[in-house]
Structures are given as structure tokens and as C-alpha cells.
Image (cartoon, rainbow, N blue to C red; front, side):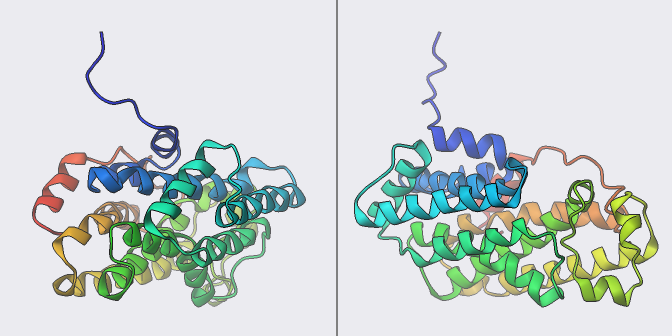
Length: 281
């Protein structure tokens, strides 16, 4: 017997499987615009897992080049037969999305193929802004707010989200000898990299994680300071901030030890619903 609920599109299913937190926030986007947001997030999920999907950097470069050519095809009217490309094409055409942000995101993802840690916190933040921050701005554009305070808040929230995610993933990355911890902070706090790769906790490592998450918290505060300049209809594009708060609390409860973080519990839609009804994020 049918449940009466419409079947999820391919893009929506991909986001639900690979980026569940963004999937939940997309459910609060107006229905007419939701599929375009799912397409953006599915594109991001495809390119974000490039490093994990390949065994050698050259294969990752080939994968990213495929997406660059697919993007070029969209803007030249030669759309490749791929459900995410087709969904992205529809979003681009329906909302007149510019090509540059997608290129920015792809260029930034190429850094994932280099295992060298970012030089400093500013470099890490620039990476977070170019990836997740850019994605959030494009999603806000689909909502009808391509600039001004809504776009700036989206950039801030997206950047903070990426910084938090990278700190939550320290253990995962360390298992493949990768670090997204700023090199200058590692040196300032005398962090033993071999210990990180061996998943050994240390107060020094915890301090680095705290420095990065403190910066994420500052970005969220800056985004919320713009609330009065953001139309209520745009705030659904900022609900990742609510989920970011939950992750920051979990990291703090673990005393910033990235190896002691509990497995992320599923986000609670009720909290998102309440925040959305209040026009908060």
C-alpha cells in the first residue's frame, strides 16, 4: 500500500544518505525551491567524497576534472546524462546561478588530494569558506537572496559548519595519515603528529581543536548578529547553525578531545522545527 508520500528524487536520496544534516535543513526550504537545493547538496556530496573514493591523488584529479567538464557542459547547453548533473542543470537554469561559485568549490576540493596540513587557521578558514561557505551562499541564492546580509550570514554559517566538521573528523582523517589541523597551531602547542596518526589523545591536541572550534563559534555569533537584517523567509537557509550548536556542545563536553567524541546522534527535526517557527537559526 502506498504511504501517500511522494518518492524522493535521486538527488534528495543522495543527500539523505551522505549529508543527512543538510538533508534535514533542506526540508524547511519552500517546496518549490527544495529540489534545487537538494541538487546543490548532492553535487557537493559527490565532490566532497572525492578523496575517500579514490586510491591515488591522480584518480581524484580525474574525478574532479569530470565534474569540471560536466559543469562546463551545463553552461554550454550540453548536459551529461547523470542524475546529479541533470538536477544541477535544472537549478542553474531555473535560478540563473552563476558558474563561478561552482568552480570555486571544485578548486577548493582539489586541496583534499594534498595531505599537507593548512599553514594556519586563516588558511583552514579559507578552505572552509570556499567549500561549505560557497555552497551555503548558492543555496541562499536559490531562496532568492543572492547578496546582502542573507548571503553573508549563509557564508558565515557554512564556513563554521565546515570547521566544526573537520574537527569532528580528526580521528577519521588521521587513520589515513591526513590532517586538517593548522600547522602553526600544531607547532605552537607542540602537538606530536605521530601521536595524532596513532589516535593518541593529548592536552596539546585538544587545545588546537578548541582554537578551531572557538573560531567556528565566533563565525556563528557573527551570523546571528545579522538576524535583524535577514528576512524571515531567508532564515530557513541558515538552520545549519542550530545543528552546529549541538556539535559544539558535544566537542566541549569531550574536553575538545577529538578521539573521545560520541557517535553523532541523528539530528532532532523537532528542534529545527521550533527554531524555524520562531524565525531563529
